[in-house]
Length: 259
Image (cartoon, rainbow, N blue to C red; front, side, top):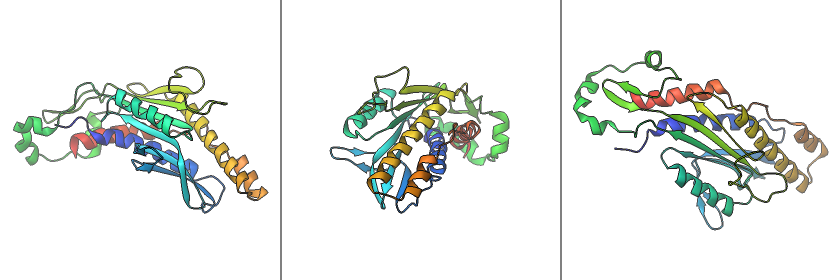
């Protein structure tokens, strides 16, 4: 038995990562001078801790990676309490952080692998796999609360939430205890889709990355033309594409249940 179907959280994180890569890849500065690197589940060495977040954004200057500026963790394979402890440790050990995100996926029933229901294994081995189109016809993206295929409960979903903290103006660190007003927001991807405030928070986070880039360009005495180009660059007002997020949530469920 395993604790959760990892394909689900990986698919959502992948969608978020793709959005960030595309947006940050559009900044009008040569990559050899300055670039933002978005990575999934990579080890990052800090002074007192080895950080292994589910997603990280770092700023690279002159080909050298700096400290993380944006981290995300998923509370699915880990408990929400464990993830919050990790996020608090990140804040203490990495004062450079500008944005912290938490993807909170709640199961309707604890996930059970096929090994716990091995009596149907011979039948499944002789069955023809559904195509994604066939599977999706029976399991709409808004109907993933109870996915039963060939007599086995492959996947159950109660809710999917995205929480975002950004560093507030004048503060030296992100305040994870701040749960209202500027600096914190959350939205839902499932069962209802309400990510308007999260999109605003992502936009705010991207603006913070832009300001960090401008400070770095000023430090290295870049040309006025490059500096002005970076200053004129603006991230999209809605960084997250709801259709892509919903589609990849459904794809993650299909991958878990029927591949």
